[in-house]
Length: 420
Ligand code: BGC
Image (cartoon, rainbow, N blue to C red; front, side, top):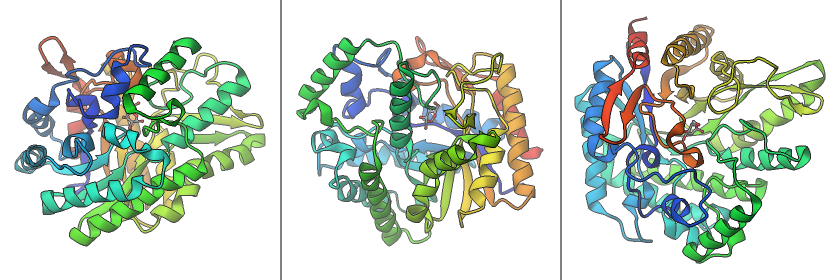
């Protein structure tokens, strides 16, 4: 257990604050924005990372997953900002001097605004651009990078695509259909106006605003995989010993007797389709938040009375153990739980969730699954994308009027797992 990584995860845009060169900054600030609120100063983690890492270490944790913001490193195409690299070097140094292993993500949903003007994640141009940024980070941060996730939840575009399909079939939007925070309260007119405004701001056709969290089909998904492979190659050329992988959002699909074909198809779309592109990676970041029961008609709504999280999907901590076992049947490398968590304002429930989820992870490990870490989402109550700050996944509460931190009992519970 001494080497097992236990800690928490964050993403730059959700916690750092003032990510002004990013696509999200534009999308949050157009008049008819589809965000419930802008990220603004977020949790001011950019200035308070030392305190946040100290709290994590004091609780007994030994790992921290965070992301480097591409829009800070390369705010204009081809112009790399050394001062921002120096910032992330300090974050890495802080981790190390606190006994914390850093796990770095190069792209956690937000991209530089200029990338969207160049076609974003919807064109083949993204691969060399992303690889150049990845190489720059690898060269500048050097052997400070031990574990590198190129892309967070590379399969999210496909999942969003499925949600839109389901919505069209059902004639309504399904709460909790996708894992990431969405704003479901918008009318069609303001969606259309918002798209026009974004098109103007990015100087692209409003139907071609390819930020990362947009529905994608298989063709455009290949561009994402090309970006991953190109980045992996560049990183490995500079840092042959760094471990490189990506992360996937993986539901625990549980079929009824008649639902087996549908569940197999969904699992293939979320995971199997990616395998040829990731099988040479050093590790896979496994991210699970819930289960879905699948019958002959597709995914069922959660049963009447099933406990739900703030996100509208089922509170189901056993999911992560199941998904790890399933992935281990075909993925040849190391597995790390790079996210798992619960949106709730009931921290006692979060404590139980952590204990139950971790028991599932340990049982999988004991059964031979090569899992080497558990990173809980999230270190801080943060900006849940389109859903704003109302969803609380954090182990630490943040008073956003003063930015004061209040560690919750769940942080202590997480840290105590190392001695378990
Ligand atoms: C994402 C996070 C998000 C979390 C909770 C994951 O999909 O990687 O950015 O905040 O789920 O919804």
